[in-house]
Image (cartoon, rainbow, N blue to C red; front, side, top):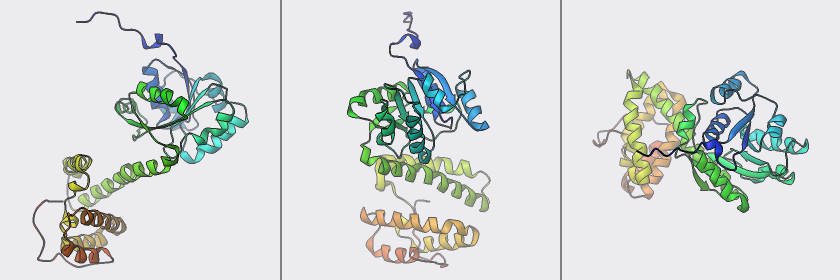
Length: 315
């Protein structure tokens, strides 16, 4: 057994005082993660009762102060506010003189790169965009989930190493995203993660309507396998009636959804069309089966499942 004393993280060089502007779900978790790496959270701004509770849970004993005071106390400032609020916040902090030369200013927006911090850059700050590709709960479990989490990193070339080092200290994996690609990068993540939640929630509701007592238990293994297969194989992982060209089955689905959950029809049709296009392009959907299928997906259908349904995989 190695009995050599391990150094205290607080004794490492270049430890920074850390402040958080906006105690939503992200900021306190990142600050707590940086604290584990030896940095020292010193201030947080929080307005709502919920944000104050998050700050207390993840950053106990760190004082809650106004944003300008957060910047005054901190060498590294995390700007963790909603995307639409970020430009105005940065401009306001710069115009009021809250930003100090040499101060590391980090935002966590997926949409924006480093240029949104230009007002602070002109005031002498060092701008970094570090976006964790993760959903957050606002609880301590978020700190654990950062281990191995990818971060979309955008920064001036001279700050690239510093940005990547901070991500690694938080347990993450830096992924460089060019400034001009940030909106597309963010759209890709939203398409996968945000829409996945909606699809799963709709599926859970439909299964309950169909009489399934434990829909979460039913979906868990199925969705886990589908996600794993998709990440490994991409479009080759497509299964189900659309990929098989079972137009009768899809028509029956649409009819049932119109009767029991009309709010889900538009989403089902849109996703089925996209699935059909991809299956056809990758040779999974036979061209002779694509035409009747696309006819079903082109508009309303109350047709029942036909006799030509193909048995096989169950989804």
